[in-house]
Length: 410
Figure (cartoon, rainbow, N blue to C red):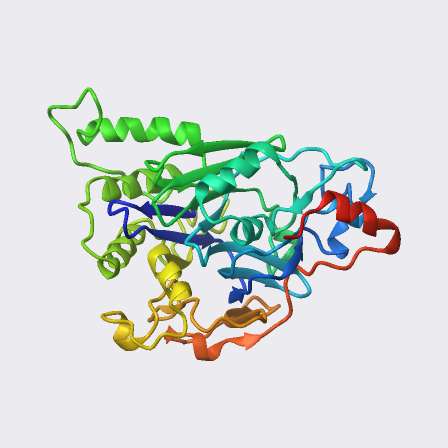
């Protein structure tokens, strides 16, 4: 079960750790998305909504271009991207050049609003995280937008390369944080956004809803002597299983009882240790001995997002002297640790290209076998120019005036 930990104990060096857990292999590329690109919340093919596989519509519906949310990216971002051109793309995790981090986690309680011919600002669930990375510099900006100008989130299928018949709807909630250590969790309930905002909201998992997760955490924080009134005889125990609630409690245990790291590199290392306590080993299957055998998810990879490194690598790109950072290289902003390979890889915002770029990390063949590229270290030299995953098609003549009036592409 996916877990996100925000390590903001030292507010100067906010770092996010996130485990990506899934039952089947997933394609994964690291994308570096440029600022200035025009993007759309749904591709033309995705605008055809079928009642057969999407309960948001009745009957089938084809959305017009003017109903789709469009925007211009204000910020560059580095993103863990699922899918391919055939299956579609999904931004599941990433950081922008201002230090805003967005983690999309599965949420079994998520529910979507009905879509009608009158719906506006439609945004696919797979593209939802990218919209935040493109448009907002911090948590406050993102929360203000979703409080006052909520888009219509469209349910989509997770783009799995193997066993399409087993594909799951992208029922997600978002955990966001910024370089100041602020945090918010954005849930979707009946198409409406439920937002929980506090720098103390450090740990989040898939389920239950976040209000219930907070109630569970209060019990454990009392056991650890961290509440008011205080437990005068604290018990420093924590669950050891891999259910969402157990990962929640274990992640909170290690972040709540830790001391602030003294510098950026130590904060990254500390966060890596915290999130590792919530990982499920490859091929671990707690359901193997059930009466009905079924597959269990395990941790495919771990992301570490260093907000300080993101901002510094962007602000000082092109400079030669980086002081104590990485032997003269720009500081890393975003790491990916593939569970099937021995070494981490990373990217930063130095030497940004105006073209969308990517590097392949995991390629899943249609037979179900995955090719895990044994890369290591800084992947800047491995980046290759690629097509935009969320292209914004030009409006038709009849739609152009409506688009210009309803959509601000600044």
